[in-house]
Length: 286
View 1 (cartoon, helix red, strand yellow):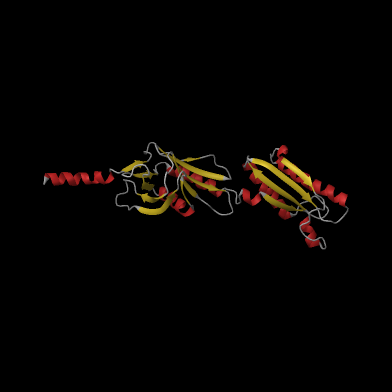
View 2 (view 1 turned 90 degrees about the vertical axis):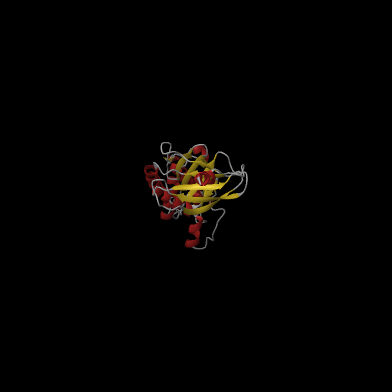
C-alpha cells in the first residue's frame, strides 16, 4: 500500500518532467513601452533565458496589432505552437483557455495577428499568463512552455493603449506617392492638396529615415510654354521649401519642372485641365 501511495505521489512530477518552463519571476517581470511615437508603439517583456515577447501596432488606416515571440534560439523546423491563457496560482478554480495556434517557421520568430494578439493583452490585463507551448525541435522528449508574467503589466499597458490611440491614421505607403493639385495660373494648392501636404509633413516629423524625395512640377497647356515651365518650377520649389521647413535635409530633395509636358488628361476643358496642374511627390526610405 505504501509503495502504491509513493508511486501515485510522484506521478504529477513525472507528467511535468518533459516540459521546460521559461517565465520571469514576479520580481523579474518587466513590461516596457519602447520609444513610443506616432508611427509605432511597442510593448516588450523579457523572458529570462529564452528571449523577448513583443506586442506592436503601426500607423495605418486600419487598427492593427501583432504579437512576436523573439527567440534566442530560432526554430529549426516547421511546426505549430499552442497558445493558452493560464490562470496564476492565486486564481484557484479558474480554467485554462485556448487562445490560438501559432505557426513556427524555420529560422523565424513566432508571431500572431491582430485578434489573438489583442486576446493575449486582455488576458494579461485580467491577471492571466498567456503561455506558448510546443515540442522542442532539439530534444524529442521535451516540450517548451513560455509564460508571460502578468505582474507589473497594467501601468505599461495603459501607456501602450494611449500610444496606439495616438498613432497616425495612415502609413508611409499611403503618402510615398502623392499628387498635389493647384489653382489655375498660380502656385496655390487646392484645399485637398493642402490637407495632403499636412499629412506628409506630420509623417516626416516622426520619421527620420527619409532617403530621397523627388518633386516634379507640371502645368496645363493654358498660356505660353515658357511661362508654364517657370510656373511648374515655382510650384515644385514651394513644395520643396515646405518640406525643408519641416526639417527635411534640402540635399535629399530633387526638384524638376516639366511645364506643360507629360499631361495625364486632355486640355480641352477646365475640369480635365485641372488634373494636369500638379506636383508629384515621390519618397523613398533608407
